[in-house]
Amino acid sequence: MTLCNAGLANYLFNRFPPVSTRFHIDVIEWMEWRYSKSRGPGGQHVNKVETKAELLFTLNKGWINEQIFNRLMTVQGPIIRIKSDEERSQVANRQKCLEKLKALILKAAREAVPAPTLPEQLAKVEVLYASKALRLCRKRRFKEKRLMEKKYASKVKQDRMVKF
Image 1 (cartoon, rainbow, N blue to C red):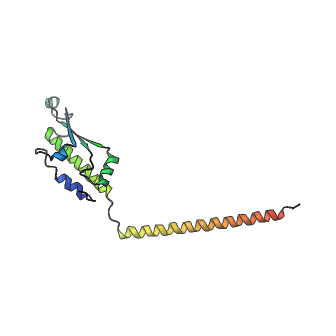
Image 2: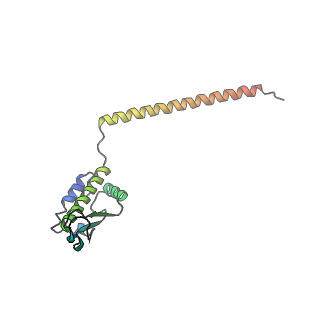
Image 3: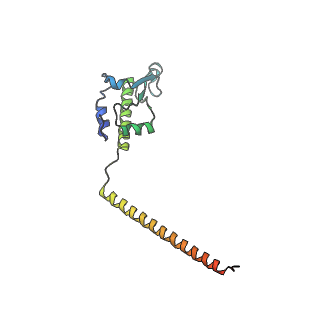
């Protein structure tokens, strides 16, 4: 299954159910959850409960478009690490991690797949190419003219020399 647009990432994340239900077995095998004590508000509760969630997501080519995969590999590497300790509950922090992962994949999908080129942009590109070709033609003519002048000056100097 390979689609060439951001719709792929939307489709895949629609397969991710909320945290409270079970994940598909093929997706959960690439996820590793770690929990630790969180910082921030919560009083004594913060020191007792591990509410900070950390998601380690291993990138795999099996479920994602190659362009998006390559973009994620260059930006994040083979393992995506996402942390959340914004909420006071572990479940809410897990949901935040999944939302951050979803946003990251959607951003990579938008960056990996180029937007269609507008006709105005194509016209500007054609003008730029035409001006570049004109500059190259002028450079070539200038170089040829300079070489001709050098040859002429060299011939004049050679003619001045006395031959024995």
